[in-house]
Length: 224
Image (cartoon, rainbow, N blue to C red; front, top):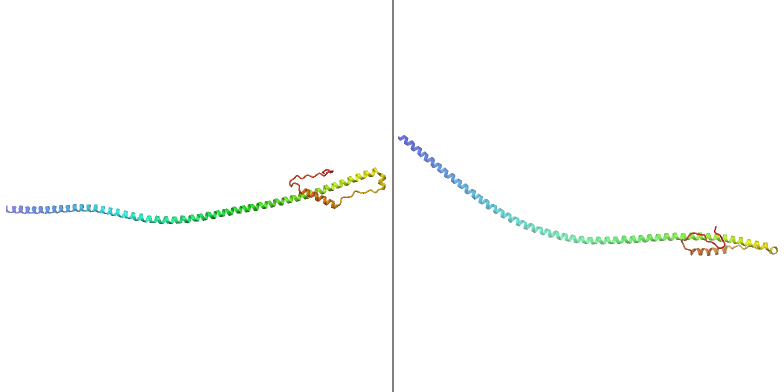
């Protein structure tokens, strides 16, 4: 009995020690779990607080950055606007000068065209006057030549007529013809012929310039 009781007592003590050990281990594990739970809660709280803080700081940084960027953009815009206004003023002045030069060149070209047109007109007038003068000289020469030829024909016909009349008078009066020597008709002198031709040429000068070339008829002559 004694051995059996000792064994039971020893087993009971072992069970009690194991129970205490398990209880202590269970309590430690519970304490660790509680600590872990608190740590997780603390981490979650810190994480939420950190997110809020980071978000706030980001918002502040973003607002500050936007204000700085806006200020820099305004400065750059005003600088660019001032440069563009200055450049636009210079471009306007350059455009005015260019337009003035173009207008002056256009007026110069216009005056040059007018002068060239006047020179061409003058040359045409000179050539036309020269042609008219040549035509007038030619017509004058032709008229003078024709008048001289017609005058010679007229004088020849006149001498022939005078000779015929003289012959007829001679045949009718034979008595007087034997007593009086026949006097031939006096030919026209060269001075009288030149004087008559000059009068004819002066008359021809006063004729119209553009007339048909017709042979004038002299009284007593037929045109051949």
